[in-house]
Image (cartoon, rainbow, N blue to C red; front, side):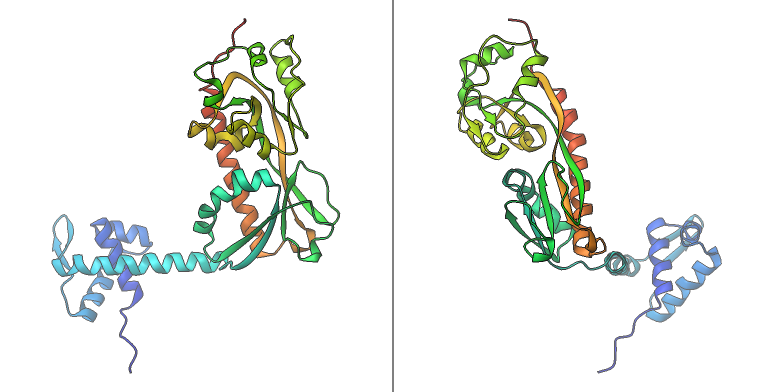
Length: 313
């Protein structure tokens, strides 16, 4: 079977530009060629197809009905070629990347964004686990680690990337219509604490101090457990804005007062220093840094304009 006859690409490109812009002069400027060169390519394509694609007019050119139909095919072909070329240039990153994370970050941040990652890297699958940092990246337990704070790991590059302000949050069902206007009113609720990085002392100091014993209450190993307890109506906690923002948007949590502490560094990205040129690691690193940075800009502006004002009681 003979191969299909394909039109000369330079002619198709000139046709698409002229049709889209409605002008041979504008097409020539976009393609960095002369107007006569564009006209020559259009005649070449019409000769190849045996059809009249344009109607020449004093003010420019206008597509014929046949040309209008052909433009749809030409546009699809050029768009497909452009997308394929871009993917080829940046590398068709595929395979499996093993990511180990803290439970809170995996549950509250990474997993809800998996579809966005797949949209950017459809051929790269993430294998997600939670647990302690690996003693050796060479053991194949993970390729990338998202761990708490920025503790150094031997033989690894550690990049801090996730810092967040914190503020008081509670469940609407716990508040039952009541809106505290000062931290002193928190004494009517149970105070929930994080075992690591608890910030209630700093928060209460910013309010000028309180008289009740806010140090008492349940303590949780990590912030995901604390947020789960808040959602269940167990008390008031200090939530990290970058982890709690979706719960607040869905009105499953409510921010209390305009006080905030931080920002606190929460997470860093770590990977084997010998694998800095690994396409899979580079793809994940670039995506997560961009995603976290964009969220931080969006969240800070939204929450700082929506918090109830602090008043003396």
